[in-house]
Structures are given as structure tokens and as C-alpha cells.
Image (cartoon, rainbow, N blue to C red; front, side, top):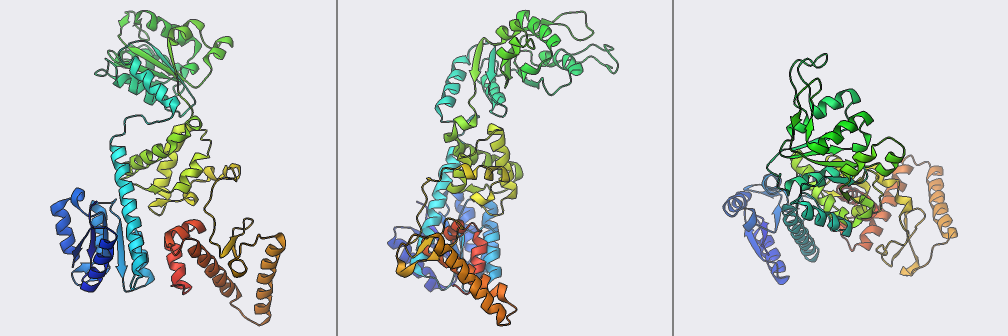
Length: 500
């Protein structure tokens, strides 16, 4: 494991942390200024740099916040913990907004500091594994048995020119399969041309497919090569073939039969050498029965049929797809990739995804843009995911609360039980808690107070945070996650309520 780098101008702080971390078998390296750290990073690079960086915020040789910004610019995945003796809100907010893993006020409890550093190490190691996996990611992802069958079929068809029909719901990745078939075929050096026959008006589709001669119709000022000519020597992907107009199906059948066609307005046959891959989300057999699709064309296209499973049939692939799409979105936007919590992944795993993989990709792009923190929590998911929350199995395993508190499932408020005993809450107990709140409010109101809202809200928030911290043994990030608030919020509330 790479060492923990400690940056502090106070020799005693460096000494205490070094000894504590070495007792935990965590190697360390110490620095006295941000400049020393930056020079060492430039000399060693990310591969030989720190596993975690722990930095003071105010040092004679520079600011820890400036160091945080420079480190995150070059090494966005490196966890940085900011220490400071100045426990002010501005420093905490600046550190967390700058991408710090956590904010550690001085004087700190040494075991808690070590625990925080160990969690940062674990997070860093998880990120390294994820990056290695993503670096080795092929053009298609999937461990589900149904997807493995698709991969095997692609391998078998790689040396063949046979026509393939890909079926599957919209957004399931049919074009990705077509591109993979082309990439691994003997035609890989030729062009891959795709056209969605449902997206082009009927009057223009013929010209798009077969091209037109100059003067063939109004506006045809020059000769235009169609998609069949453009794909000569390669692969033509006809998406949503089930929506092709009936009269054009006859012309397509002719091309598939002998490789010849005529441009619109042309009199000379054009020869093309194209492998056709078609795709549809419709039931073509039913379309044939309804008279909307030619039976002879159906049999010509349906030489090999490849069915893509819907995402709800391969839910075990959701985690790896999410991490892949989050990385891709971050690369497109030029930002640091977001991480996602297990709770958020669990919600995604219970969603039906009517839009399949395309919808999941769009959600990941939305999360990259809209999530304020680096860690995506369940509360950050877009509204459509929340629609299915009521349908989630209530027997899903959850971490039980600490014995000092009994969770109130109806309202989500934690209520202390007597002497730490686990007492089941009845409706009477719920009513008693609410009645007590009402009685306190009435007493304050009758007493002439004008800050009743603030007084009771502070007491309520303080009790909630204390309960959450009790269940997580003081771990603020975990407590914030349980309460459904951000880590910036819980840090600010702890300071405001005097709970340090």
C-alpha cells in the first residue's frame, strides 16, 4: 500500500499521527509545507504518490485549501483530509466544496482520526480497483447470463457475412451490438453506416437509402450517394426496420437478393457489397400477419436472430454500468467522476427501467450534472426513480438502530426508549410524543416567547443528530446518510447547535 502523507508545520501533530498510523500498519511520510508536497508529487507522479493526503489548513508555507485545489486538479481521485484548529464554518464549507474527503477539527480524538484515515484509505483502494476495471472495459458490458449469450453469438458471427436481425426493447443497446458485430468481423476496415428508418420521413427515406441522380426531383441539384453506397465494403445497420414503408420493403428485398439497386431517378444499376444488420423493437411476425411487413423480406432478414435482454432482466449488471456511465459522463464534461453509495445502487436495482440501458445512461449523466456532492446518495436520484420506492420489498435488510433509540417507522423520527431498553412503539407512544411536543409549544407560546419555532426546531434537530451519531458511533458522514442530509449540512448543524 502507498503511504499516508501528512502535511503540518506542527512537529508534534506529525509525530502523533505517524505513531498512531504505524501502530495500525499504515505507512506514512511527513511534510512541513504545501510546496514540499507539490514538489514530491511532481517527482513521483500519481502511481507512486500517497494513498491519502492529510493536510493542515493554515501553514506558514501556504494554505491547505490551495494545496487541496492543486492536488484535486491533477489527482482528482486522491482523498484529502483537511485538519484545522480554526473550527469555523467557512473553513469546513470551503474544504468540503473543494473536494475534501472530510474535515477534521483540532484538537481531534486520535482513534477517531485514525478511523477516518482508514476509511479514506478504503475509499481510495476501491476507486483504484474501479479505475482498473473501467480501463479494461470493452465496448459492451454485462455479466448476466443473457448478455454472455449475446457475447458468445457475436464471437461466432465474427467471421461470417450472414444477415443478422437484432430484436429487443428500445434503449437496450441494439446499435452497440451491431457495431460490435462489425468491429469483430472481416469488414472491420470498411465503413459502419447506421440509419434509423423510423426517424426519416417516407418521402426522403428512399433517397437516403439509395441516393438520387441530379435533377431526380425538385431540389436535387447534385448526384447523391445513398447509405448503401456509403457502406460499400462494410456494414449497413437498419434500425427500427419494422417501421419501413411497405413499398420500400420491395426495393430493400431486391438489394438483399443480388446486391443491385437504382438511385432515385437513375437508369443504371449500382452494385454494392454490404453486410446488412437490421434491428427492431416490434414483433415482426405479428407485423407480417397484419400485412404491414413483407413475409419474404422478413425471412431474408431473419437468417440469424439475436435477442437483447431488457435491463430489468439483467439487474446484476446495473452497478458496473452505472460506474461506467458516470466515468464517461465525467470525461465528457471534464469533471471529476462521481461515486455512488450502495443505498443509491439499491434504489436503481429496484427500478424497472422502461427506457433500458439508454435511460440508465441518461440518469448517470443527469447525476453527474445535478448531484452537489461527489458521493451520490439515494436522495440525489432523479424523481422517476422515487416512483417505485413504495414497491420496494419492506423486508430489505437494514442496519438496526443503536439500543439507546427505537426507530419510529411511521414518521422516521428517533425516540429515546427508557433506560436503553428496546421497547416497541405503540400508537399511544407516538401520540404521547406528539402530545408532548404540542404541550411544550403551548407552554412557550403562552409564556409570550416569540422564538418558539427556533427553540423547538433546534431541540428537534439536536435530538435527531444525536440519535444518528449514536447509531454510527460518531461517524458524521454515515449519520448524514442515515438522516438523508448532506455531510456539509450535518457539519454545519453540529456547529450551530453546539454539539461538538
